[in-house]
Image (cartoon, rainbow, N blue to C red; front, side):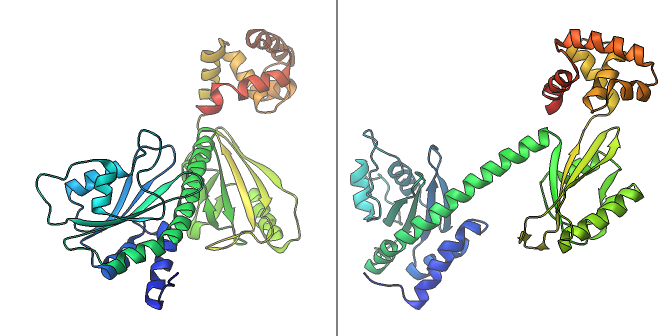
Length: 359
């Protein structure tokens, strides 16, 4: 088996790195385009379970008849088999025969093509295709043949990356609906990584904001001092116990600060602490109005129910709402009856797992 020359080794590096290019494989296509002198150079990708095909190309646009033939050859036939055998380089006349399609009536000046298909373990398929006005050299076909196994590895990496991106998008979407996010801090309290919804969370409160040099700033001086010491201790390894802080009660904002795992780092530097942020997008009055609409509570009952849902005892809620404890106990019985629960624990569970958790 022929090995790659030093010059061709650049193609392998560009092929491996191409999954991070914007657009994908831009440098690889440029190198392959220059080396083969093809008029059109392209990579086609089809992920498992998808009927769509993504094209990444360089040079002249693929002519309509070649694009049509490309689309046909990228699908399984009626028996569920691919018309192209994996890893084999095909010429244009073979592909036309495989698809049993007549030649176009109007011949294109770009009439020659070479293409190779690979499939990775989870079912994603990819094709590298060259098209030209003159016959493509045997050397170009041989190059595609040698590139095929390396293209399969790159395709596997791309498929894994796309899966991870999809999982991340789903996770961040769920966290956004739950008004939840996280930020990684360095030893100076600067944000060096975070969920995409972090700024939206910070905009809902003046208790916490992003300051100069991306420092996480706290409105309450005592919490700011505690956080500075906590992050410093986490960075030095002097303390490992996580700590919660309530930053605001209307709207509710709390955080949970944990030390970073040993050795955790991102491009911007080492991570000292991770701050998990839970920030309600609604005021207490909004939440009480929602409880009225959702469960048929009276406004006075809704205020008590929401106070209990925030972790207060009936006595603490009564003091906070400036009502007598006897009144609060009477309200609580009516609340339990309307929600069909038997006590505070069930009440909190019903409220915090209701539609209020995602609106």
